Image (cartoon, rainbow, N blue to C red; front, top):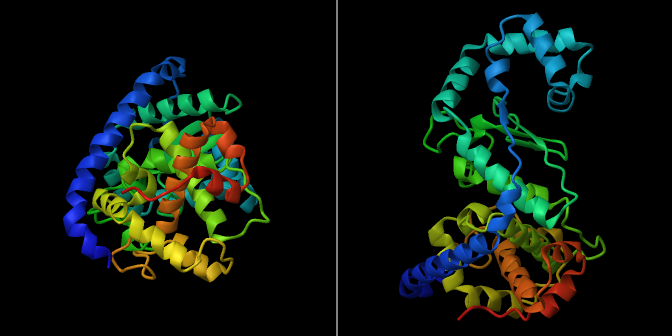
Length: 336
C-alpha cells in the first residue's frame, strides 16, 4: 500500500523537504549564531595513539596514572586484581596482529578528528545555552576492538572509532545486522552522542507505559537533537536514508491512519509496542516498505507540532512527563 503513493509523491516530497528544512536550518543557525560565540575550545584526546603504541608494562602504568577516569570507568579497573594485571592484558592485545591492523586502518580513515572536534564543540555550546547546568565532558577516541561504540557519562565521552569505519570497509562489527551497521559512519557520531545526552533531560512518567508514551519519549529525544544540531539532516538523527525520510512524509497520512484505525496509541503490550518502535529493517505490520521504528518518527512529528503550537522552550518540553498531554496539545495532523 505504501508503494502506491511513493512513485507519485516521493520526488516532490523530497525536494520540498530539502528546501523547507534547509531554509529552516539556515534561519535557526542565523538566529542562534550568538550561541557559538560562547564556544569553549575542547580538544579531543586520541587515546588509541597512546594505548596502541605502548610497548611495556611501565608505559601502560604511566597512562593509567595520566588518565585515571578512563582507566577506572572505561577499562573497568575494578575487574582486575591490580593495575599490573590490567597492563599485562593490554600488552597482549597490542601484540595481536589483527588488532594492530585494525589500529592502522582506523588511523588511515581518521588521520585527524578536527571536524568531529568542531561539531562536538558546537553541539556542547548549544546544549549549554539551553541547559546552563550542562557540564562539558572530556572527549576521548579509542579503539575498542568492536566491544564498545560509544561510552557516555556526565564526565566523559569515548568514541570507539573502529565502529565508525566506512560501511564498505572489511572491518565491521559482527554483532550488528546490516541495517543497523549502515548507521555506523562518521556523520552519525555527533547525532548519536547528542541523542544519548538527551536522556539526561528527557523526563518520563513511569506510569505511562503506552505506545504513545514511547513515541513521545523518542520524539522528544529527536527534537532535542535537532534543536542542538539545527543544520544536521534528519537522516543522521533518526538513521533513515534520505529516501526513507521523504517516503515517510509522502505517506504520513497513510501511516497515521494505520495507528488510528487500529486503535494503537494506548496499547501497553510490550511486544506490540516493539513492532512500531523497536529496531527492525521494516515496520512490517504497516508495510514491508515502511522503515523500522516508524513509531519513533511519528512521535518526533507530534513533538515538533507540540513545541511549535504551544511555543514552549526546549527545557520546558524536556521536563514535561505527560505524553498524553503533549499529544493532545500538539494539534498534530499529518502533512498533506
